[in-house]
Length: 292
Image 1 (cartoon, rainbow, N blue to C red):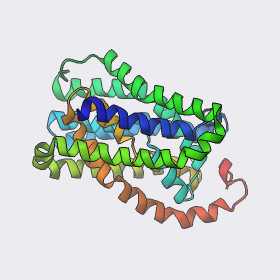
Image 2: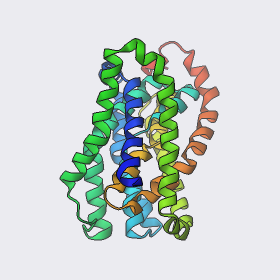
Image 3: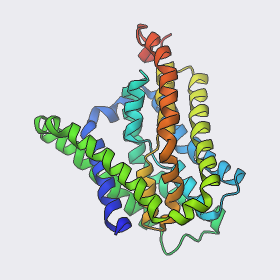
Image 4: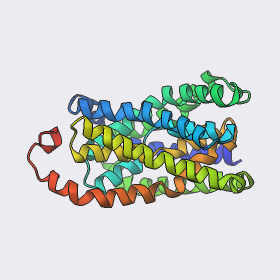
């Protein structure tokens, strides 16, 4: 019941809530911040999944957990990354744009890296499922509800403005329910592997945020843009990873569920660290365009 009904419904609520926050301008903004968006998306599409591969190897995770970690690493940024970027006084517009683009890009990244992880860690055996099937599942549980949310905002702006906060709260409740449900449904496996999984997911979180921030600064992006990119790498859409796992083997969801337990702590500490630094940059003319 949990994987068949609750997971898809919860993710649909979350993705509709994201759609309610987006407009066509969020996708067109790639032309306003081409360098920032390109670096952020490259980090999401390459750095995070490859780090997940490396960390799974370094911690010698069991195949099912290694594949789950890569599935998490290949998942797009989550909506909470936008909020934490805002609290850190980072470039919220850039954050929203990356979340929008990476959510669409998940149609490619999730199946590709899931297939690579299955081939590397399990000899290609992830059960009776095809990559075409994974693509279809990602499409229907992410892009369809995302598009519905965007359509509703465009078609009924006044009504959406009235209910948007309630939908956000519902999305947060749905997120917590998904994480708790995933852990509860596989409690024995989580308990037996909690130490390895916790350390591996924490390593992925810290490494992805640190490396992506460093790459952004080496590319001479502003602190506010680098903050947005690091947050996007730190706050994955773990609900998507859990939902995709639930359609194949719920054990693959364990790394994402454990990751969800602390990603807000590390990202919150990072937000607090960067808030003062970004406040000074925010007041600098031209800072949003990378002119320092």
